[in-house]
Length: 336
Image (cartoon, rainbow, N blue to C red):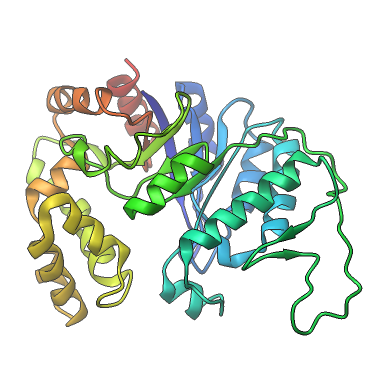
């Protein structure tokens, strides 16, 4: 089992210990450091900075939002960062939800599966650099020839030769069809919630993955003698995503929790959150669900429950530990 350090996206200010904690993670044997974006800081810039201050740890975007950039713009970012880091980039991407895609980026959010497939195909073609980029898709055209075109565009080939033509692409996916497609077109999967105690939820969807396909799951790993108290941050996060990260009837996270066997609870959490009763929404999150998707408790409990993750298809646990001592303790428990 590999370990990843998650920085996520910034709040009002950047973290003060971005470099020092990442360097400590590298020293302790963490495999990857992850950066994200929502509608604030971008995912690439922190990784460029970290590339200059580290040597081995892989640098993952977890995730960049596809609506933020055209596929070719993303390819340029990826090729540049892969060179600067000497081939350490993992390009994690995802569609995000309609609120962000339409509200922040001002882009359409329909047909996410088809958009993702075309996006990845353009990326692969750009990285391969086998010829001038020519692509005629439903959502992406190179050259562009639709309404408003001046007819002067011509196929181009990325000027900077990629360090790697096979830069790994990971996709954040939740729905069954999206996960199945991810296993077919990507090198790794970034699930939002995964329970090693309910492998049947995704068993059929990931059955077609290759032997070297990676599954990197974010988990809250907290060492504490009070399991219930340790699960409160997990429940708070679940309530936010199930209740607030989407709209009624159009929330991928709510649907996922329902598929995982907690349908009534998922809809109750959403109803409470959307009606402004956020504390009640957090309290409505089942302890069983929060506990299954995290690793919380004394070291011996975490080691015991870690076996279920070791026996699962998951290849990496991503944690958001924020102190050197906790970072070290997590490494001792997971990596031995």
